[in-house]
Amino acid sequence: MSTSGALSRIRMQIMWNRLISVVEEQAQALLRTAFSSMVRECGDLSAGVFDLEGRMLAQAVTGTPGHVNSMAESVVHFITHFPIETMREGDIYITNDPWQGTGHLNDFVLTTPAFHKGRLVGLFSCTSHLIDIGGIGFGPDATDVHMEGIYIPFLKLAEEGKMNQSLMAMIKANTRQPVETEGDVYSLAACNDVGCLRLSEMMDEFALDDLDELSAHIIDSSRDAVMARIAELPEGTYHNSVRADGYDHEVDVIAAMTISAEGIHVDYEGTAPISKYGINVPLSYTKAYTCYGLACTVAAGIPNNAGSLAPFTISAPVGSILNAVYPAPVSSRHIVGHMLPDTIFGCLKQAIPDGIPAEGSATLWILSYRGRHQGANEPDAGYTTSAVTAGGTGARPNKDGLSATGFPSGVKGTPVEIIESTAPVVVWRKELHTDSAGAGRYRGGLGQIIEVESRDGSTFELLAAFERIKNPACGRDGGLHGAAGYLGLASGPTLRGKGFQEIPEGERLIVRTPGGGGMGAPAERDPGAVQADVLDGLVSTEAADGVYGVVMTADGAIDAAATEARRGGG
Image (cartoon, rainbow, N blue to C red; front, side):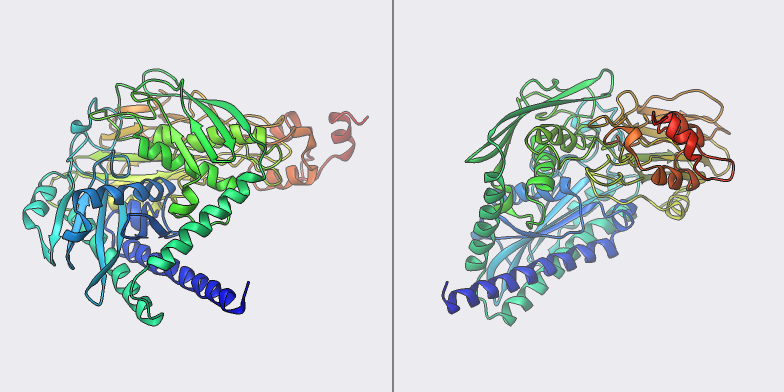
């Protein structure tokens, strides 16, 4: 390569890095201005910049795969509804269409055309989760999408800088939280504005009139890098299945992954049919989390954009739970969608035996509460809030799993202080659940125990949408399963894992999130690591002895002779 060619590539890389920093600032603007606690505390958002063909050039690291990778397709739909030649500076477009957006009505997607010196050069898009958008509420009980809340088609939120007040009035009238919902819409618009401003500054700095050359470099380089990784894998078709609890019956997710010279294709033929309830997954969301599972292993370290996603193709039968079509209920599409990376990992394990983690808790446990106390908007209006909690991830090939960590979503847990400040509830207990991790040479991550009560002891409502209660995370290579999740009352009764339920007056809700699966035989775990877990309260002395074969003395030391005998050494 000539010196000029090398310098050109270096310059392209510098601009690419700068573009990533632009979208990261875009995401931070959304994070810092959002009213939704799911966004400002947990990072349930996405932000990205796109070229004029609707191809994603860069995404913010801040955000979730479900939002980012489904938003990557949604911008093309915006261009279809609002052709490039009709776009004007100051225009903002909005939708929450689950099939052409990010999978359910609670996610609003805004797209804004970016201009530089009066010329359209790109588009910024962003997504965030709004706590309440009317309807039956954020739970899986609806039997069609129209029960789930307000449905916004592709519309102009602003035209040449003038907000559509009629649309805003309609949005505010269809939510239990009009102040927060209006604020979230404006925060989405503001974050795209920040992206547009920073992009124009960047183009001035690098003397760019358009993004055409940079766009081609990003897309081509990323695609080539992923294809090079795929070429290192053994070609063939690999199969796996994962069983989810479902709503009224269990659900099998069945995958066939084919690695070839053309890329990786995943086909979900044979997967369970559409559900009557809102645990169905639009194909865009299925693609998003399937691609994420592949990218974590095959394309680790390669920036996420249209080029790096291009080698991955996904299909699912129309009418299956992974390709649910309008007007199917989809509010809790994360229930099944978050299990797709584990499904993919099971396929990849056959091609990459030493590089794949065990199954984890996967699905977020989002505690959605609702009550009749004074709300934040009007006296006696009631309250609605959602608190993110998580279980443990699966053990990794050479490390323990992560405890109380939202994988694959990447969403952070809601702090207790925020839960108690946004709803009149008391969190009496929130701690890691001893012995919930799947045992193994490397153990899984631990789940949590959470205990919640209404502040004055009155009744409140829970919109349950939880997984891994019947089917815990599986261990790998001799590792044990993680602990199953649990939902019940302090007085003893067990609650259903899904569906609207009332927590009676004076009762405390008990939640135990699932643990991650272990990796390798428990007897192979370093006794010192078992001892450390016992001293930290992660593993009980009984489990240390009965599961790991490590005998502890009363003062916390390892009884070497007894341990050797227990492990078959004497």
